[in-house]
Image 1 (cartoon, rainbow, N blue to C red):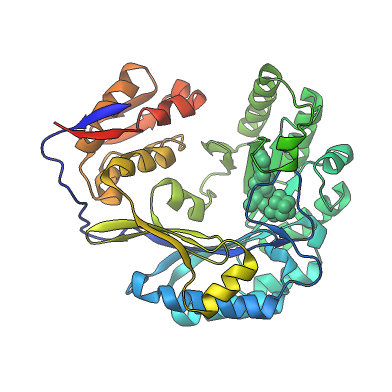
Image 2: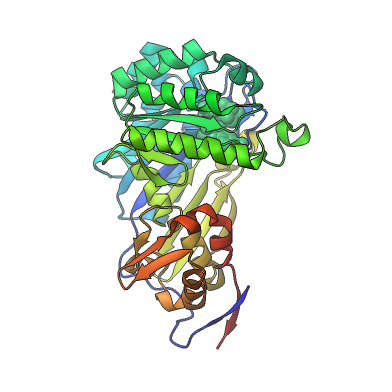
Length: 398
Ligand SMILES: C[S@@+](CC[C@H](N)C(=O)[O-])C[C@H]1O[C@@H](n2cnc3c(N)ncnc32)[C@H](O)[C@@H]1O
Ligand code: SF4
């Protein structure tokens, strides 16, 4: 869409105060690559170079310190890949290294992603002792044939045992599940949801399986439920979660009251984040600009580039033409939407920047708004891609 920018929108952003800041740390190895996964994850083929990688992460953070000067970290997320492949001692050294270099807010949320196949109870206890206070566990399904179809390294009993230990040790736990799996019936999907709900974890994520380019499933697609069947599954699962007291607060995220993931909320509210590690993305605001950075992707290349004091593969300013879309892409995933004032606080531009797109979205019944709030309607949440596309623009000045 081509839109005009009204008189009164400045050329450059300006920030009275920087947005909240989160830290993402990427650990890129897995036991085996899952056929549906397009994350920057690599089969370990032997022991990953843990000690060398933790050293590199700490160096990477040190290089980044001037860009987050004087700011505190509100949450840390150690994601992957499979971070739980790393020993508790390595995670301890990593988190101690972080705390020694940047101040964390009191009670900062510190999440680590774990896979049942790499589970040992003592390891979870070690992660807890290292300062991890939230565990995100990749269950995907409790049906044995689905775990096989998804190429998972764990079986259903390992997933159950890992969920029980995670809840006993951390309390603050997320379980990741996927639905609309190969040949999945409605009954199978609701059985998965019922079992996940029975654990009473404070947070559940339900993702519809998507066929991502550059994956084995994309090249050899499995027989997935058709769109109508997938929509029926989604509706049934969402009803079960609501009945069990989980609020559907974001497209794929469900939480008991007050147990939303603070780290992810910061992304959706267009906060800042520093991402360290192979392929990690950052978005950082400065008084007069917003930049996006991407680190070198291949683990070996990343280690070499950090050693050469140059971990960044990309470092570019976010343009005025893109920033409104980027804000809305995130904010409109939230069921409650966002305060209208957040746009200026987080993009550095007045809301006037997206005036035409907001009006178009409202006219089509995709958002509702008043002077204090912008929120997707149920229709807007259902047709999220159409809604977000309204904010894509080629900039012309009026
Ligand atoms: C960063 S990933 C990986 C977490 C962890 N390594 C695991 O596999 O359990 C986070 C979650 O994204 C979801 N996911 C990954 N690929 C997906 C796909 N193609 N479609 C839908 N969800 C996907 C999975 O539920 C996964 O647990
Ligand atoms: S374990 Fe997780 S990150 Fe690794 S390949 Fe599978 S889905 Fe991707």
